[in-house]
Image (cartoon, rainbow, N blue to C red; front, side):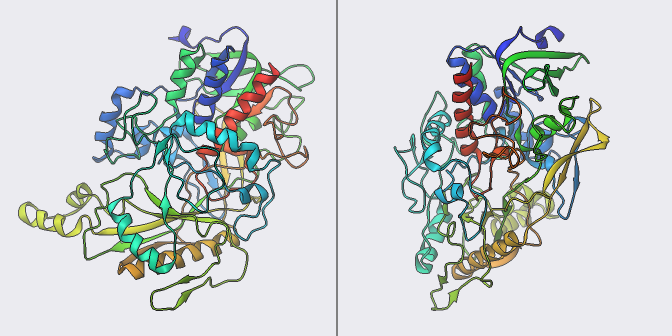
Length: 547
């Protein structure tokens, strides 16, 4: 009904986006008594439908985009540049955002990331250091519910334990453990935003194993948790309300309203004292570029000309194959062990059991990397059965022979910020409201390619030592993105070289803040959601101080 999506009278804060950043900002400010409205482009997804979504996820012909209602005119995009960017493969528009189907790994960036010295690279430094975010990291872990352990010797310092104990290592982790000990590689637990025990009125992990694309139990954190808390505290969330542009008043130094559309074809304006953009690293620059007027002919908050530029991703490195023993893969839908040993020093040697040494094939600079030990390698029994041509006992024999013998390693490699990697508008292609769609210009830098090669060297050393028949490798020529959109409204102190300041306020517009990985100055190689959450809590503090 149209009335359900009518605007509120002028409120304290209007938040654009109800993913992890927007939901946390809204919940934090609403708890403090501020009037908050959240405008979310996508729908609400009912929790009670998650078991049905899981059933669809493990059966053909559904794919992940269909399960979360992605695609069509609303989600059109264009990809250009050297590397194709499949934007819609792993994003969700809706209350909860992409945390509705994320993997749930939550690591803090290293101190060296903030200094721009992670790996052997020479990235720009952040205008704040790890100490500035340490208390917000801890608060984000409490808000989301993180299970972890202090067994990572390479992690930055902590001020208190994780809210919940870590998940125990998986069976296949134990296979890797013996080999890694021989090679001098330190394995450690993975912090997960999923409950290892009941937490925050949510159950412990029930072991469905379908974490991506859907957690039926709710043990894995998703931002609809904080969206509900925001509403309980008095905030209002308007779904299916894509913001078309931001409007400014006389002089153009303050946003006066967010103009949004509704399913009935109407357009409304939500007025507020403060505005927070939390729609992700692609839609935020798109919205700013769409918000042109006489005062902002090149888009809002874009006096530097950098809105949309320095788009960064994490690149996937991996290798795997089969063993002549059971590996119990696909029993767990998330990671329980990884190593950050090569994060700050990707070039360190790995000594094999036979005494030979695996060293990088280049002496040039490398990017940070983290390596992962998979729990979900190889085909599922459903996939084997559907793709095969056997029946009855023959099919059973094939399943018993093929299923559960796969094993693999993965990893993420950081990408350095390049101005040429960017999000722009493509006027020749429009969405369901006639707006130009985002165009992703994406390419890989030579340093990332070298680091992918180095990651593969280490992965092959481990897998070969384990006796794996390696059948696939994802490296420089076959890599893909982790769908971590970063850098398109970068943070800095110089208005000519950045879009937002260290308070996450845009340099150009006094009442416009950005809570997103779009403010990242460099990418690091850690999954970004915990840092996004920490920045959202920081942004909420600054907005509250200005109200």
